[in-house]
Image (cartoon, rainbow, N blue to C red; front, side, top):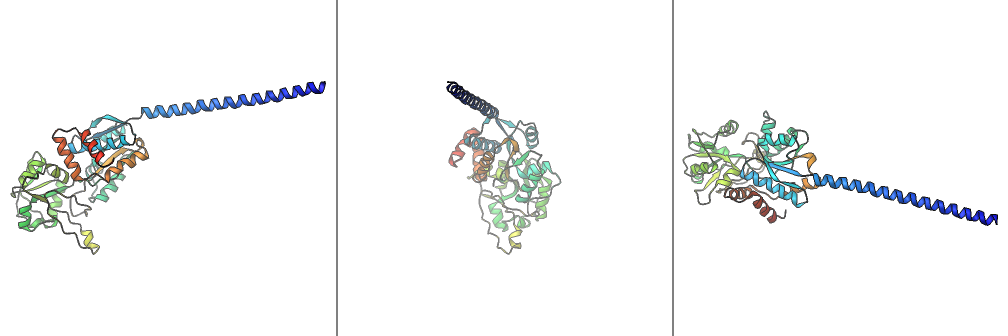
Length: 340
C-alpha cells in the first residue's frame, strides 16, 4: 500500500516536472516570439521611416537625370521622396552632410574642381579616381556614365573641310583671329589648353545659350566652345552642319596603334580618354550618394543606369523637358525602354 502510494507520488512528481518543463518551454517560446516581433517591428519601423531624398542642379538635363536615378531606385523597392532638392554641387553636398540629400547627379570634373582646386588631372579615369579620394567622408560616387559635358571646340563642317581640320591638334590650321563664341564667361584653363593645341582665336563673344553658340558657328564666321551635352541639346537637325574638333589620344600612338579615323557628324562625340595635355578636364556624369543611405542592391541599380544612358539620350530628354514635358514622365519612359 505504501509502495503504491509512493508510486503515485512518484508519478505525480514526474508529471509535475513535465508540466513545469512544458511551461518553461512555452514561456520561452512566447518570449522569443515577443522579442522577434519587437525586432521585426523595429526593422519595419526603421524601413517605413527611411526615405531617400534626391537633388539636382536647376538644369533640364540634370533634373531629368535625377528623376532617372529616382525611378531606377523605386524599381527595386527603395522609398524615394517625390520632392527634389535644388542647388549647385556645393549646396547639395552641404545638404548631404546634414542627411537631407542622399543622391544627386554631377559632372566629375566640375565636382573635382570645387573639392580640389589645385588638382591638375584631366583624363576621365584620373578625374574619377581623384574625385573618389577628394569626396567628404561618408560620400561616394557610383559608376561614371558616358554622358559628357567636356568643353569642345565646334566649327562649321564647311570650314573644317576647307581648312582640313578634324582634331583639336590641327586647330592652328583654322583662319587666325576667328571670334570664339561661348556661353557666359570662358574658363581660363580651357582656353589655355586650346591655345596650347595651336588654336589662334580672336575676340571672345559671350552669348546667353548654347543654341546661340551653335547658330553663330553655323555661319562659318566664328568658332564656338560649348560642352558636348549642351551642344547635343542645342543642335537643330535643320541648321547648317557643324562638328566638334576631336580630342587626340596620343597614348594610342605611344602604344604603337593607329588612331581611328575621325568621322564628320552634325552632333558632338564625347572624347573617351584624354591625355593631360590634349584637352580640357573630362566631365562625365556620375551619381554622388551618401554612402550609408543606399543598400548594396540600390547602388548596383544606379550603376546599371551607367550602362544604358548616353549623351544623345540625355540630350533628347533635356530637349523635351525644355519643351514642357515633366522630367519624371520623361524618366519613366526612358527607364521603361531600357528595362530599368
